[in-house]
Structures are given as C-alpha cells and as structure tokens.
Length: 464
Image (cartoon, rainbow, N blue to C red):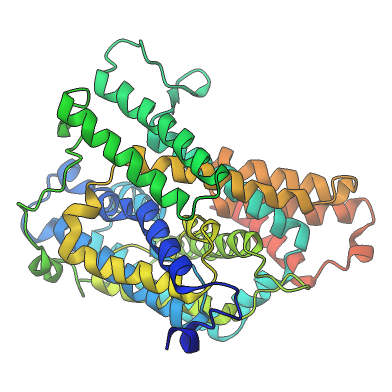
C-alpha cells in the first residue's frame, strides 16, 4: 500500500528511511508547539487582557498541532514530497507584535487577515501564479536560495543554542561564559549544544543511519543527566524548563473552542487591514517558494529546467493549511525549512511528511514528551543541516560575475536580514538590474515575470 501511495522504489527509498526522516524532521520543528502559543499570545499580559479578550495559549497549542497535522497530510497526498508545514516563525511574531500590539487590532481581526490571505493563496495556486513565479526564477538563484537557507538555518541553530547571542556594538557575538549574571545552567546548555554538534557530525561521518535524529536524542539524554546531577537547574522564569516530560497538565482539547472560528471581519475594508493582509501574503509566498526551491534542489527533485514537478499540490497544501489554521486559531501556516533535516536523512517522498503529520497528531495527546525536547538538543541538527544545504552553491558558476554576484547577495541576505523572502527579493532585484545595465538581459532571456517581480519588490521597499 505504501509503495502504491508514495512510489518509494521510483524515488530510490524505503519505509525505514522515510520513517527515520519523518522523525528527524518532526524533532527539529517540534519546538513550534511550545513557541507558537507563547509568541502569539505575548500581548495578553502586555495589554492586561482578561476574559474573552485574552487569547488562550492552550487553544493556540491545539490549533498549532491540528493545523500542522492537516497541512502536512495534504503535502503528503497532494504532492508526495517530504516537506512539513506548521505556523511560521516570524509570521507569528508579526501577528502579535505588529498587528495586535503595534496597530491596535484585536487577535480576532488578525486571524481574519490570515484567513483572507489563505483564500487569496488558494486562488493564486489554482491559477498557476505561484507556480509561474517559481519557474521564472533562474537556476542560479535557485541554487543560491538553497545555500542561503543553509546559512540561515545554521544561524537559527546557533541562536537557539545560545552559542551566538546579542551584542549592542556588533549585533552578535559568541556566548560570553564569564559575563556578569550568566548562570551555570546557561553555560551548560551552550556546551551541550556544542557537544551535540560534535556527536551529530561524528555519526554522519561514520555514515550511521539516522545520525541527525540520534544526535538530537543523545544531546537530550546528556542534558537530562546534567539535570539529575545538578549542573542544569530548572528555572522557568529564566527560560530553563525541566528536561523531563510533565504529564500533570493533562489534555487541552477543550481550550480549542476559545480560539477556533473567532475571526472578526469588521475591519476588512480598511486600508490598514489590506496592508496587513499583503504583508502576511508577501512573506508567506516567498518564504514558501524559497523553502521549496532550497530543499528540493538539495534533494535533486528539480528537473533539467529547474522546475519542481507536482508543485501545484505542494502550494495548495500550504494555501489550504493557512486557511484552515486561521479558522482553528493560529497564524500563517508555511512550509518549514527544517524539512531539510529529513531530506538529509534520505527522505524523498510524502511518506516522510505523513510520519511528521502523524506525530503532530499524536502531540495532541503526548505533548509533554515532545515539548520536553530542549532547543539546545535540536540546534545541532539545524547547524549540521546548514552545512548540507550550503553545498548547493558548488553548482553556481562563480566565473560569470553576472550570475555569481546576484547569487552571493541572495545568499548573504537571508541570514543577515533574517528572512528567506528578503533574500529572494535581493537576489531577484540584483539579478535583473545588473544584467539589464550590463546588456546581458536579452542573452539570458530573463522572463517578463522577473521584471514584474523586481518592480513589485522595489515598490514594497519604498511604500511598506
């Protein structure tokens, strides 16, 4: 049955490989179950909301798990690709801090904006607009997107682990072990993450199957040992939670009713509301396209023309996931760059994403186990996969400056601007402008859509 559904032999894979890949992908993105509820409801205490005006974090947790499960299932069966979906980081912060806190809208109005964005997505996916955008991007930029995402997720891993931290003078720095106020626990988590990178790297060098997943589990287990012997001290106020699963809270199924189908469309015709919808739409379109390009190129899923077969199903899964997620009570659902961890483990079909979807479904009932996995244990996986993704730049022709410079700008923009979509924008603008000015545009047969995208990106920077 699995062979018939997912064509495993055609994709040179097997059930064991796909299941391991699914487990690995889920382990690296399970943090969203803990982070999304806290991020999306950050305004509750800041604004002092009470009663029905508050957004229930338990309800957001349920919405996150169900929406992720549904969208990833759609990816498995509509596209047969090993990509997982969940509410996007960055988009959830935009939801809470910009739309609710900054612009003064209620969370119910913000959910309405996400819902409308999802409907627009469905229309764009049905009319081939998003597919046309994907196909119009030159192969050089597609390879650059893969490399840029590699640096981006490695940077996220370094941040999640605390290896890289804020510095007011230089923006970032290596963790200051001896700085005033830095606790032993903080230092221990950073050391554990570094040990995790070493363990994971050794496992991969030894070609041990499931090395990334084993690296996560090994780092987590070492952390638990540190907790037992007192090197790791539980302090929720400082962000250090118990590394052992806590089943005392029970299920939060009933909390879903507090956020599901609570959308408020009363401001739908206001200019500010349309700006909010466009912002959600822009980031999600190009984050998703960037992730699909990057992960697919790494897995050699693009055809000779740089196109992704069955892309319409992948885009539709994303669009329907966003719409359903908003109805359930969560922010924009998007394809996750952490899918690259599963691809690096050999995942090539929808069976990988099916496993991820099942685990998201199980997380509704087994959430304490998944939520106990700390960020310092999953960070090494992101760092090592960043290395895997970066290798795509080897196929870029660095002798041709008209290809190499836009690719370089695209690559560095993603980690430094902390956005996949900004990296794509910088890459497309520089590619078109540089080739147009130097007279190479005709020779390269740059499509009309690339010119349109360049104009739209420039207008976005001017007006939004």
